[in-house]
Image 1 (spheres, helix red, strand yellow):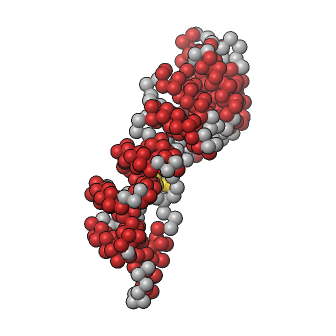
Image 2: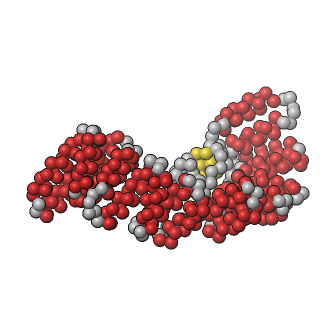
Image 3: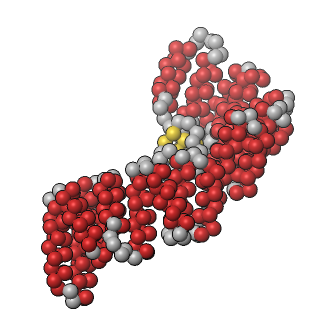
Length: 390
Ligand SMILES: [Zn+2]
């Protein structure tokens, strides 16, 4: 948040606090109390406007400890501090609300919820977890507390607990959690694979697909397991399911898929599968996979002619890069320097360019991320389509 926006919001919050205070006390006819609080309030507001946050906080904390009437604006001001990144101040202000004697229970739980969020912003996940668990226990702000707990367990990579809280959250809110839940199961499957527990991994993957039948990550992990077990036939049909589930991810697995055909000695089937994919898919990956196979099977001439023909139909810098590489490997002296210069320029152009982008927040990545490192959404970082990418 920019400094200007913050100042405007702080002023607005302060003014609203004053109006609210005046309204409450005037309507209750308690003139003396109004004057006392009014004086303290304007003192705090003055500090706030002069950018003396610590002094302002002290005044507002004293106000919060003595008067329930200022609860709402105090809570909002604390939230503003958190959003500005001044978490210590937010915690101090919110804690002062809880310190009030005879605070009604619904006020106390709202302040607890705010402190839990403050702790999360400060990275104090253990403390936040205790507060949110308490709120769930007493059935106060249950959906918000469960969502926060899910986030905490996700950050702690405690996938079992993340699944439990996400399922509970789904049962008390309108929001669907089947996509994150399927990824939590996939995380558990990955851990099982690392520990060579294939059976355990398969069970988790089945749960992932039960949660989200289109979970391409689960399908691809199943295919990898089958390939490693030498069951290329099953792996092949799983890769076909992955194409049906989400074609956008094709560049991430097309080479692995092609290898299953090669190991099964199904060259003709591989060629017809890739040609059919080229018809339906607008990216360049199937073209490059087929070119590599043509090169291996029939030599560089056929591969280069094929890529050249395809590039006339779909412009692609990656395709051009492959074409130059094929021409360089022809071992003809004529024009080699020219191709080398071009290839080096194209390499420089492609170097450092992200291959994947988050469809939610625009984060660019060179490597696969099932969870976006920026916006934390699952299954949204996909290959980029365009001249310089797919
Ligand atoms: Zn994102």
